[in-house]
Length: 390
Image 1 (cartoon, rainbow, N blue to C red):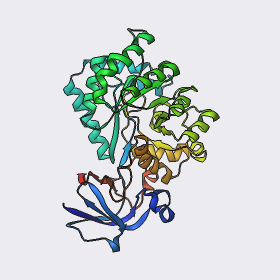
Image 2: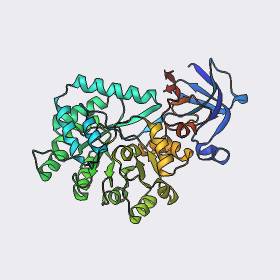
Image 3: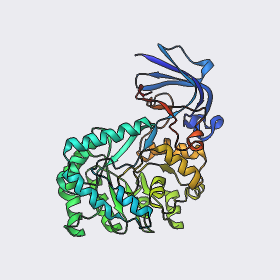
């Protein structure tokens, strides 16, 4: 199997806990090298100690980081909601109602149109350093359209999430729709999904409905996730902690009891600062969560309504500037903790045996991700041991 050594790395972010004593949270190494064998990392260490390899790549004094792990996105949709964004920016309050607009357009799109649209967004993400991602359904809201949305998503990632419980369609009642989601829709969606999710929020699904939907998914082997506490205080975060879910996402409005439950349960709070940027809601208290011992991840929530960005670098910059995370904490949240939110230990870390998913930054340090917001710093992307960008 061919081996490649990447040298000339000014600063290497490994996220390897074994290097924390000397390299801190990020397991940082300077003047480093990485050896890739096949799709995996074979060796990491000081450049002066790098073993021989078949091929050599010079990083040219750039920083190298693990590929971003985006654990929350909604990429299977059709249409555009820029008018809704413009209205919001001129003073209208965001609600979940715009989802139904996207549902109508998604149902009208062909499989080929949806697939082409997802492919474009995934390529856009990869060019910005995202090498692993989760994709949800949720803009079909019928048995046929939820199943085909997940079939499209599964062409691009193994981390697919059934979100039939996004909102209740206008032509049915909440009771009838929950029965549909937990019955025929779940049966059709399950072959294409790893996860099940619920939008547990005012105007969407309450705690009892969310509990029933997650239980139905669990009964057939789907892992649970949850949107919660995005628009107001509620019981969604407590439910996620009670059920021991891998992650609960948004967490914008948290009471002290919610923070304590997150810290005690280990459930990851996945924060989505692009949403707050795009809706002018308050940002989550990321600093308070970390200080309380809560595990925190960052993700894009790329979707056509409340947050149409695919840039994890923007999310890092927002987390540093608006949510008071350090640049190291923000990068860790966007890589290693994003992987943990997907119950993965093979990505988000650059260590022997892990996936060779890495990003070369056109900068000497990872700090530039927050220091130079909006600047395209990705000089190269390696996925599964192969250069895909740059």
